[in-house]
Length: 349
Image (cartoon, rainbow, N blue to C red; front, side, top):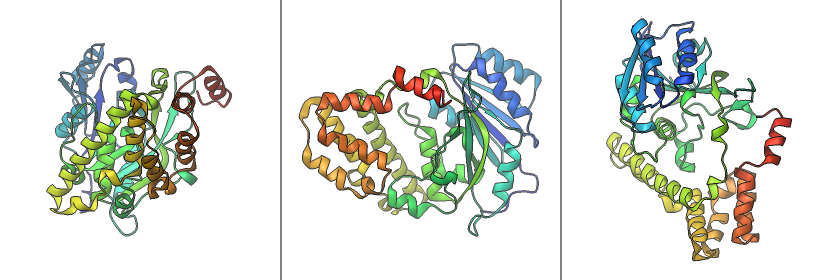
């Protein structure tokens, strides 16, 4: 990576769908930066609330705010539109229901000017403080053991695990323009996640820097609490479809950058998580418990290297019949009065 210009141009890319009630707070946080953004690009992705009115009001008063209105195309489509409109040397991503601390641009630029293990980073990820309407501090996200996020040149680790070790969500990401150009357009299918595409491709392209301070306030919505979707047959099938589509997109991107490099990425049928989802899809669809496939999942290096709670969850499928396993999964991933009461007691909701 070349050095940043002495005074780099900075863009903030925001996507918004029906978050008009949060948009003013989001934009005010962008306007309060210790180093001002040169442009704030906001894509209104076909909102049906007051997003357009709020956005147009700000854009009419402030020349650095650029409003883009488009028919609803989904998260990745809106992200593509926002990134294409940004002209900065550095682009910070942000969701319209979140807000950023005044030093976010300053600290991102400082991280990009430094070196990590001798390399200039091409992108940055940082911690976020979760909050809700009733609790201003719900703890940091994402969770990394020991509180230290991965940094440096992580391509070898990603290839070994067939996944990026960076768990950052959109509002915790910032990129050099060169990295975004190398990644190219995201797959805009509605099943896809923009942060997964960006993090995985960037991990294979460039070193990253980690900032431990929470530079974003990440809003938690009551509607975001799962009600057992992880064990919904429909959701499992969508996740499998997403995995296949993501795999095809990533391989295509790798081949464009360096022909032959897609062979370094492990095929789906050699990824423990994909095998687990395949087992669940067959079992929950009524095909019976494929013990051979389950044994392959449990013995897979991905499973054995993974977090202990994953292994405990997987082994539940060995001992429990289907209906009890579904109930067990909903207890883990879903919501219940007892879990909500416990979260309130722990000041986590």
